Length: 110
Image (cartoon, rainbow, N blue to C red):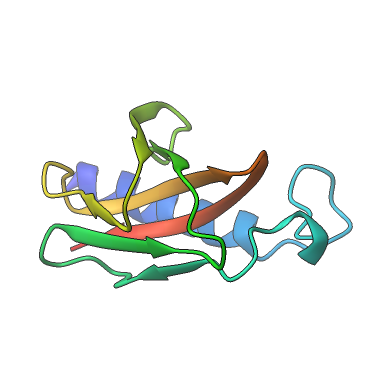
């Protein structure tokens, strides 16, 4: 039961951080710094496959962090399909870097 409260607390903190105003340093979301045409689907992931596409479809550095900020997975993606079947159910942060531009998104695994 205690474990559920910790996950709930972490999820609420992640939600609050993701909804902070654009003026806060460290959490700015400038369109000029985003990867053009980035699409991540399905999110939430329920069958172990995540698809990441962009307008340029170049090689992407993909890093997944747990809610505590610890890097738990890092790879270079040469296609659009990423296998996340080994991740446990929960909320993660997904950092994608393409052509020296990085974008971070929330990833939910069911």
